[in-house]
Image (tube, rainbow over all chains, first blue to last red; front, side, top):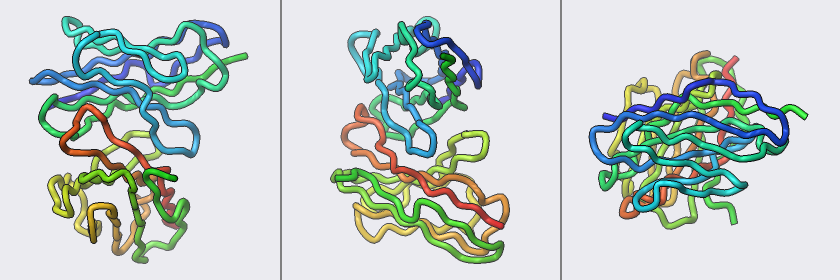
Length: 114
Length: 114
């Protein structure tokens, strides 16, 4: 069974500051990991993913995440926050090679102050 | 060119009514899903269909009945609506042979039961 924990349901940063959204997962088999973003009143959009290979993955809008197996983490970062980054962010896990059943974390609302 | 579409976007109805939400995807995927997002933004899988066959049915009241007339469509019918059914319902799709792709989400249907 898989589970995902996102530390901090709300994160507030100033525009231009570093963004760090935390995600820890639990999986009995090697996982595929995803970050999705949800803008207000919209559906979820894939931000980036880790499947195999390089553990530092880059996504859209300047976001990146690093898969750390020893820490069972997949934290999302962005060097400089922009007002347009304000949204809800979801981390999700699925067992590799076992289908597409995603388990989502509880989400983190990112607020960006001017 | 919308990949995953849902209708209607908003649905306001009285308790006890029956309503349906429709979902269509033009991505050629063979697996489709329904998720419920509650007021705290928590996402929970409800159903998953692969090639028109039900493969996942989480603990959902039997008032909820999904129907997949073909691979590109997955509709959700809800009988005897209750206040607690108020939520945003998301449809998603994915290709079962490519789990690294992740899932593609529709824009959501906001259901309000009065």
